[in-house]
Image (cartoon, rainbow, N blue to C red; front, side, top):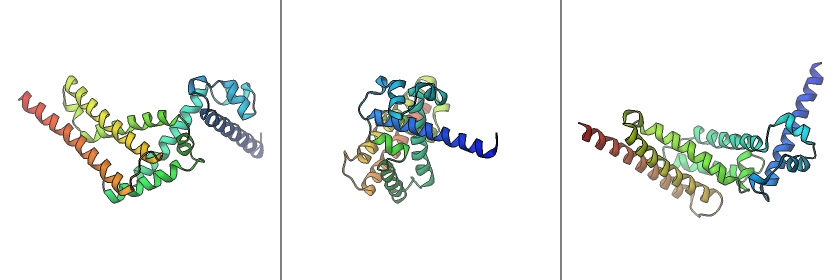
Length: 206
């Protein structure tokens, strides 16, 4: 097969995958995730089920791919900015808001469907993992105490993601500056509490 033929096949594959992704996102607006079938997607994408299965093993796999892309988009913005300062985080928040309003992006597409709840959960887990890494204490603690630290971090991460989501989706009116101050204070409070717990535990052990 020549280079031109291969390129044509690759383009056709990309078009089919894009059509399938658009169909899933469209269906998410009016159908519960668990109720979307391969036939629903194939019909909406104007393809047959065989073509669907040539690209994805399930509807969940399609949604997983879209979620992964959305998380990558958010991570790319966060990691390219300075989220340790109020001004830096304000700029990041402004970019995230633009991303959420852009339906051509994976994050923007999911933001306008009920699937944003699943996306928020993915982001909560990611933030929890990062906060846990920043605390730098979990590996030094007993299993029972480490579990308490993990609970504290999860609680803080859930609150922060909930706050960000309500702001991004227009449910809370705050300026980027106000929100960035709130988020930074929350993160510092969480890490401070974890370190205090670790110090107290070390003192009890000695």
